[in-house]
Image 1 (cartoon, rainbow, N blue to C red):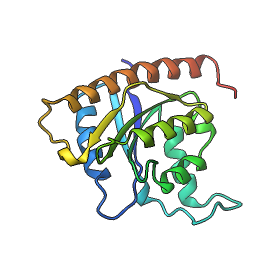
Image 2: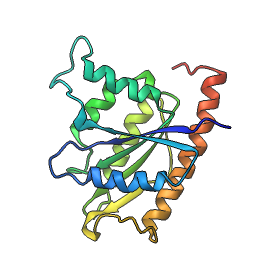
Image 3: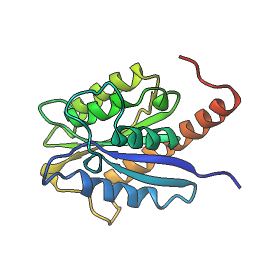
Image 4: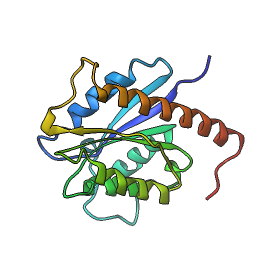
Length: 185
């Protein structure tokens, strides 16, 4: 029996009243339909990150880095604010480095009309610099059309299935590759 692929779903918004927790809940329901995936939600609001980068990592930073290190793959749930992604998400990403390497990252983005595509474009650049592999397909949600629902009969559900298939393929391939030969940057 193969060990399930460990996916960390990171909620990238820390704003009060955010849609990110509801979008994440919907996405994790889609992922739960796959027995070969073990999904953990990593909510940035649960970490007490310092306002500036400290000389020594705090307990919250160490805890976040451990979560990133344990995962085989990631899904970043991000809003688009002013054609970019949230600053707390960038801060969190920067706390880890080696832990992102040679692992796949997928995106579930949301916004008004843009579906978060500008945020994802910028995140692809950030994760490429960290030697992570971003998967091609994205789940993009236009909140003006409403939030996704549990009834999975629409295009968003197909997009989620495609994203999970790509993440699974890359996650398993890269997990095997890291086990056979440690990644060196």
